Length: 105
Image (cartoon, rainbow, N blue to C red; front, side, top):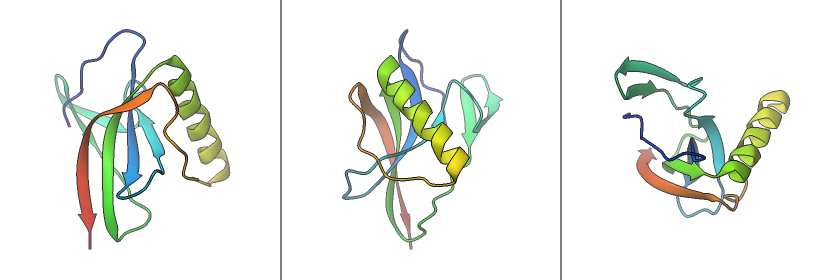
């Protein structure tokens, strides 16, 4: 996955959005680089695990402003602490830049 260039005060996240759903599952802040491995300049390899195997999943690169970034970080911190990954609406100040659709049969 190519690392997207972004503007100042814009935070990029990998977020799952199951097809036909208003549910969002933030997974990783690209700037933290916790979930990625650099392959070469501006190219990163990311592994992504989908808990519910079957279905259509849309993996988005989401732009988040400071407020949305904080909401995503709080969600991720709580999810990692509790092991519970509840669906949430996309917070204000966040929007999808691009997506990949994955079908698991």
